[in-house]
Length: 413
Image (cartoon, rainbow, N blue to C red):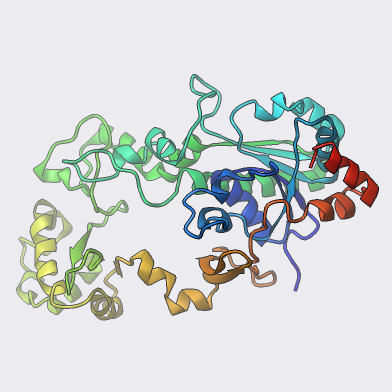
């Protein structure tokens, strides 16, 4: 079994979520990811939201699978020598420090190019070049500055951030694509390059349908939004609740037994209108000119979904899905994290995996969502702090036991 990125070595200078998401994905594909951490501290998430005393938190373990950890003081003179050699021996350096942090270590891009012209230097920052380029950004800030929050939630409520980590993890996935493109380019040119991805930019890319709608506003109201025709539109794309963004009306309707996640999302499409009306017992509306066309239904979508909800409330969300799917009515149950983490089909595809950890024991995590037929990903546990320091110094960088001991005495490792 071959690994897609076997032979690619990543110098992982990332922390928290956005950068580790990127490097973990590359590790799943088979890259040798060497995570550089501070001795005694490590990635801040090792101790954040800790649920098992004196063990790495799930926040850390679930973002750092398949990596090796080396502790290194890059401010130490001997530590800088080790870091230089790591740059020479790696294919990609990935970092998500505050702007200018790697430069202040004494390793600007020009020097890195001198040390290793083939190295790809990949960075995540909050903003691209502009008035905010020096600002720090976190998940919710990225969602707010990238257009997601202003378009999420209900029209009569405040802007809302989404539970999906589109700012951090979303940017990490974008950066991984950039790194793979740069590796392919290097195969043709022999040279590395800078790869940069701003969190604001990544969120904007994920909000592209809202940028579509902003321009559609210039030519009239957005008919698939709940604000039409019973509300008003301002100059910017409004929050649309649970309305479908694809032009077909959709909404989350309640199901039995009525718990907080007992909902199913139903989309009304013209070809499935008759099937939907038959199944809910409203056959008389199939050909009724007041209901039979999308244009006729638009002014009363609330009543339309109200009728559908009267029927869905008599069934569980899974019964609704089992009934409507054979009729080609697009729908999907609102699945809680509790339901997803134990879903057998997701376990069978290794989308949900169980990982054993020497400090905290077994836990469940998300596996590689991207499936390669010839290179299936095997999820391995995250490293303990500095677990592979000696191994990397000897097998990767070529230092002998005496040199390693001297580095340790000097405080470099």
